[in-house]
Length: 183
Image 1 (cartoon, helix red, strand yellow):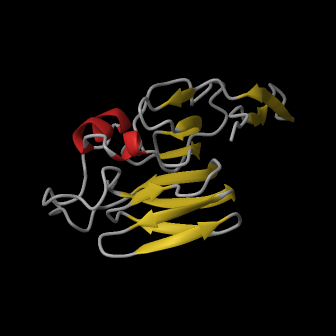
Image 2 (cartoon, helix red, strand yellow):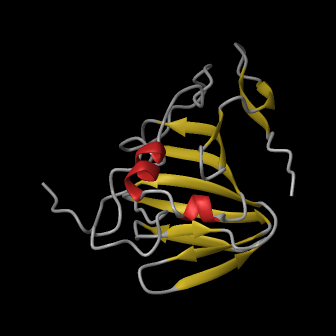
């Protein structure tokens, strides 16, 4: 069940003459392990605006950020989900959501699972390896390597019931929450 969690990240840009170059090539350094749950999350890139500023000349992933993207921005990360354990399932939902930087969660009527949360974003989720279940309010979807989900701000939880790690790539794009009144 051991897995190499390092992820090579290549970032391109332009030199002073406008020629396309590689600015960064190496293992992505912003990697976090969620205590108790064992998730390993590697932040690859963040934008703070739309349209995105190109050629920033800085590592836009060299920061601390929760699960949701910045307002009008995006987040790109890889998450390695370990097989679920009794200890992880027993975690208090408030503690887990706080560790994830998520304010939004299930309706407070007793969430289906401690991992249940929602973010006001469009999330593109791509299963790179392994398999995982995505729990919704009253249903679930089993996903395997190569499956892709477009998740639109719904209550959900990712639960790995297999015996090996499951690696997912996520791109989260800030959105307008249909469950919140708009100004």
